[in-house]
Image 1 (cartoon, rainbow, N blue to C red):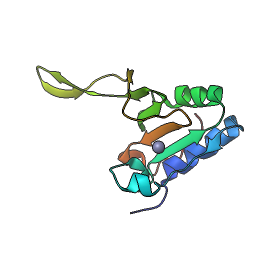
Image 2 (image 1 turned 45 degrees about the vertical axis):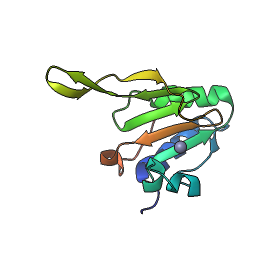
Image 3 (image 1 turned 30 degrees about the vertical axis):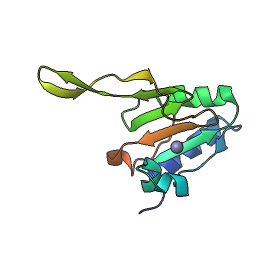
Image 4 (image 1 turned 180 degrees about the vertical axis):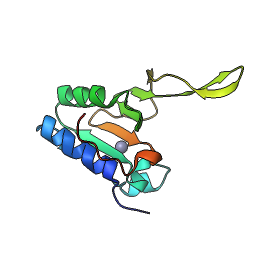
Length: 124
Ligand SMILES: [Zn+2]
């Protein structure tokens, strides 16, 4: 297990600068996360709390970036789901889908791609 990645740490620095009311809710997983597969365990996920309008703005600011793997907020997930085509499975989207597996009402979850672990985020 490694520590927080540069991409997650620098993303938090940008968020805190742009939305001072945002609340840091962790990069590394707690015991609950460590019991299952989670990008938190490898330091590639960031949880951001705070006022709801701030969480919405953060989710919107990070959707669409190619270094972002997925975002979960409330009962929605932004991702690039695998789609079956004549040529095989390809990444579709990106798009928001309903996601009711987990409650994410007190924070936005942002997962970053492994290939982007060392990326430094300087703007949203
Ligand atoms: Zn999370």
